Length: 147
Image (cartoon, rainbow, N blue to C red; front, side):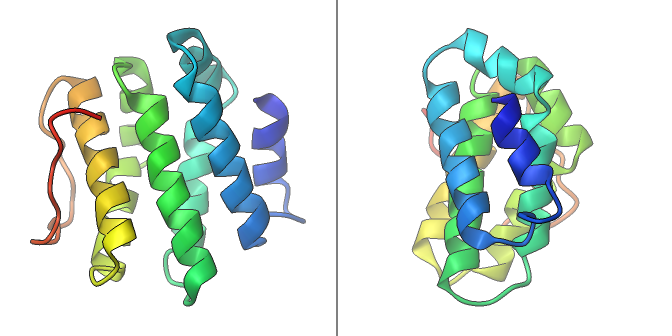
């Protein structure tokens, strides 16, 4: 996990869409395995790396940034599922805001709306309370009861 985060944060790879997408995918799959691995994501600073990646690609155009944002939303959801500590870290790095901004920016893109909805649901459930975001959630978003 630590190696994946180091690659994400490395300035040589920070703007490479495919590397960022693959890193988010690896984090998502890794955290899917168990609560212990979610805790490892916390200690490896994977949450800030994913949120920074979202902010970096938010205003780029094309299909590759969409793939990065979609995968980042799912990685964030997986890291924060049932983990209040990870949700707190995500909130402190403005993760929910990054998700909502992605949904606003690509409001006509169903894959982003779905991924963002999954991320917001996981963040809300993990925190045990409704999210406080500084932006309006797009009207075509939906919230799942289970993630």
